[in-house]
Amino acid sequence: MRPRHPDKLEARSGKDSGDIKIVSNTDQHMAMPARMRWLTFFRQWLKNPRSMASVAPSGRQLGALMAAALPSGVRHIVELGAGTGAITDAVVRHGIPQQQLLAVEMNPVLHELLARRFPQLHLAHGDARHLPELVDRSGAFVCGEVDAVLSSLGLLSMPKELQHDILDAAFKVLRAGGVFIQYTYGLTSPLNDEVRQQLGLRSTSVGLAWRNLPPARVFVYTRS
Ligand SMILES: C[S@@+](CC[C@H](N)C(=O)[O-])C[C@H]1O[C@@H](n2cnc3c(N)ncnc32)[C@H](O)[C@@H]1O
Image 1: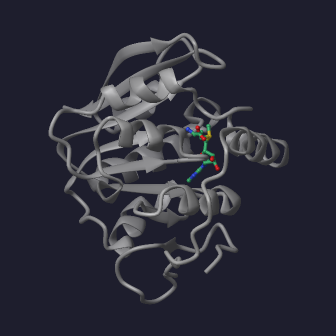
Image 2: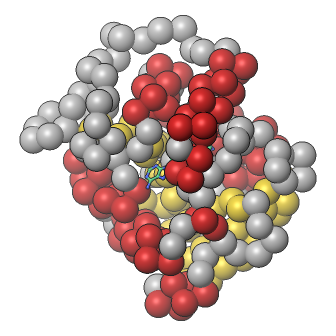
């Protein structure tokens, strides 16, 4: 079943109830070559530069840095704004099975690309602000048992209210001690300081992917 409306909650695994749609695993096609993924990403950026937040998919070095920031022994991972799957791919290369990942993507074209590229991935079509609902309805994991949330969302260009809603939603699904991992093209943490304090978060910079276009820094947020 093809996704049509970005506001509609849609998942490929778990329960088939309410407004959830099951995306058929029999509708798999050959994975799209990297050049085509780049072009698809660029076209989506032309249509919606604000939501895409970048002209190109994340590079290998950034993907590896994000994956390396995962704590050892993680079992349940959520990825926000998975796009063309560059970070997803890095996480899988890091040794995490696709079945242990739930990717959330709002853009219907990229959601469909992800479904084709990663046949075993749990996939939700929706807005990261509604993460607890998306996790519940996916049937993949239970809220409060997620070990890590990886985010490619353009936090830096978001109003602080939206930042607050997304981080609040993420920490509702994370277990105690879980981590929120985010990259940014800025020099410092992309999270508004007021929001960070309201949610009681601490941030740590864990590295710079200087070969990425543009270079990107990775931050890990934890709740003290
Ligand atoms: C910088 S791009 C992702 C890049 C990705 N790492 C890649 O390499 O393709 C950000 C992505 O977040 C998605 N996005 C933006 N806002 C979102 C939201 N509120 N909920 C879910 N996805 C969102 C966009 O559609 C876009 O695919």
